[in-house]
Image (tube, rainbow, N blue to C red; front, side, top):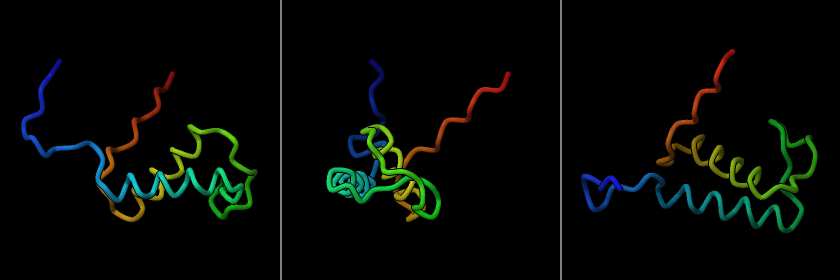
Length: 73
């Protein structure tokens, strides 16, 4: 296993974790919706809720790794 260079270097920041937690709470309460303006369907998938939370964290400027580029054929 590779070791980290610094003891305090984490992939995700605290605010990113809070953003994901908030998205999960909204998913459970049924108010989390997909789509840019929130007019999409209700989010039912746990993975989708996490992705939305990370996306919101990125927009706020939190420490979140970049999205992986999709492979082209």
